[in-house]
Amino acid sequence: MLAAAVAPARTMAVVKANAYGHGAVPVARAALEGGAEWLGVADIAEAHALRDADIGAPVLAWLHDPGADFGPAIARDIDLGVSSLGQLEAVADAAASVGRTARVHLKLDTGLSRSGVAPEHWAGTVARAAELEVAEHVLVRGVFSHLANTSPDEDAAQLEAFEHGVEQARAAGLRPELRHLASTAGALRLPATRLDLVRIGIGAYGIPPFCDGTTAAELGLRPAMTLRARVAAVRRVEPGTGVSYGHTWRADRPTNLALVPLGYADGIPRQASSRAEVWIAGARRPVVGRIAMDQFVVDVGDDHVATGDEVVLFGDPRTGAPSADDWGDAADTIGYEIVTRIGPRVPRRYLGEA
Ligand SMILES: *Cc1c(COP(=O)(O)O)cnc(C)c1O
Image (cartoon, rainbow, N blue to C red; front, side, top):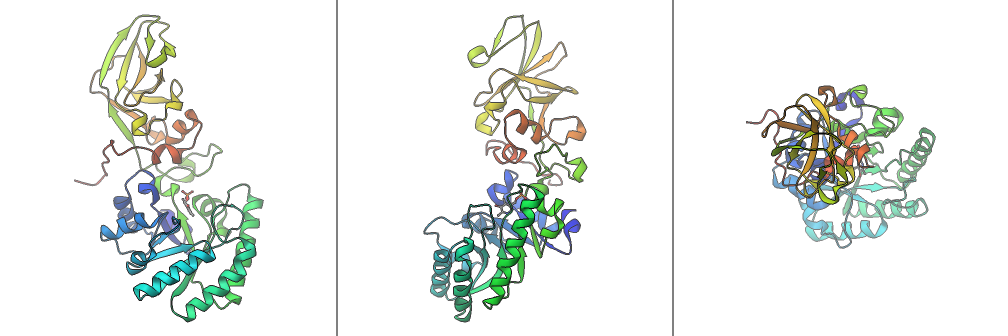
């Protein structure tokens, strides 16, 4: 769906961080089936994991530890993002040592001030890259940058800085086939930033990239992850009964409490204690008291809930359940962090899988 929306730009599905908690290999396969041509990851180990699963599609890894081992990545046709002259030299040396040409994407810092070659070092970096191309140690397949998503004007200024950087690269003799700048937010709201390739992360998981309350449905997105549990215990309590550590919540009436066996060890943010809601027995119900490592409590009032009943912590809000963004609001964070932190103790099941 997104791949078609951004065409003719090509789509890279960003599957870093275990595909934002969803599972890198199944997501990578589904994304390639869904029209993505590229896969993007942060570090090289994540790229190797895709190759280990026999995924042969183009993969770009862009964030490297000092001393990263580039040789095996080059040998496995993993494209490398390069953010400094030092990295460029290290990649070229590694390519020479494995007898291959490294395919690199040079990253220009256009204003996010994280990684990327600083503008004042860009001319020198592209000049050196051109020499290393002649020596066949590297091939500059792409030039890229990343938007700060601060405002349309500031993003437009980054686009301009990026285009200037691409001109400098061309003037140095490079012929980058792929210019890429936009992640989900830019791809959806600033079509001019789509260029040759867009790097789609959060949108592929059906979660809005914006913090302004725009819903998934408004963007035509459907959340991929539904986090479910089963009620592990139910109890009836009297007014005044304190719940969970520190008794930060007390019942003010006789009520039924349901115990949900997920906690902060599973990525449920403790910050959302007494703030988030979950879907149980046909309604949204409040989390009450402290979220603990393995469990939390929900107040279901006088409604009947039984052990084994399904609880939906978040999913597609069109079903009535909270969204990952609702949990983000309850925990002073964003939907990205909510899904990405769901821990390994929670089994993933994929729809359409036996
Ligand atoms: C994570 C990341 C993306 C994807 O961003 P979304 O907002 O999830 O679409 C794209 N590019 C880079 C460099 C990233 O680190």
